[in-house]
Image (tube, rainbow, N blue to C red; front, side):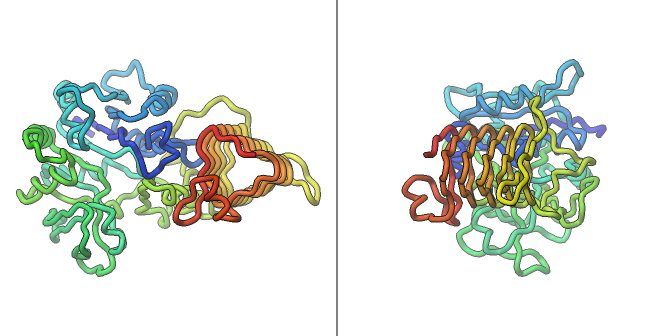
Length: 409
């Protein structure tokens, strides 16, 4: 695009609802879909959209994320093309980021130095594909100060999101952050409301002025949803971009509008399960809109043994490089790098991260197993939830979660 665009990704959240997966890493660094980290999806959207000036703002437990960015997302030697991780630098005083808006405020020097026309402020912890250039064209055509990306969600889910009201021109006329009472539904759709995706396009001066003003209010949460947007939209120059209208090259119609907030363990598990069907809800194999990541130098996955009782095979499953399925069955599951599943074991509806070893005669279903876990012979997980609760973390929907580095005997 001819317009100078700076992109800033908020990747510093603690992700407490994803504990224990976030016990040792930031939420955007949590592995997803076998080959990837959550941060890879928003970064791929920017790169595929031709937006090559990106700062990634980090904070809590950032080492894993910084290492991943160094290994998979380094760009060097090309002027004005970069993906730079920015740790919390306490530019405005000895304090951590106190909210999403404060995170950008504390890094206003990056905006001053880059001198962009527009600033994209996006979250780093959602799963979706988006051609961001389409949102930028929508923004510039309307001469907006701020454009907020939104997606229709069922009325009963409104309490989890910032809910938006619009007029016929998609100008924002109302905004409530996580409403307690049922909000007004979308025009012509009584069953859905418009929810903010936490993705914003700002005019540079409008953003800077609002952040400086917000920093003066001691009682502010310094948050885009709670403070910045409610203060801006009554002026009439805040518009809403309908994400369900966004189209990326190569996407099938069933995938249009796919966006998942993987902020809970149940949502994380469900989003991984969206990948494994014959016609997946979210397709990782679209070569016209690739999801990029760091790929370690590993051999291909291997399946060994073939007999009536001992056949290594996988059905409706993603098996990453370096993994060996040795006389075992894996079904409706996602396996990361270097996973070894030994003979006579049965894995179903599970997310297995990198470097996990599952011994013989194990039965595991509806589980999330973090990296570097060793599971001993004859282990049963997911079949007796009451027993599992005595040993492991079990979610409300019955997903069993095994922390990184555990040894299960």
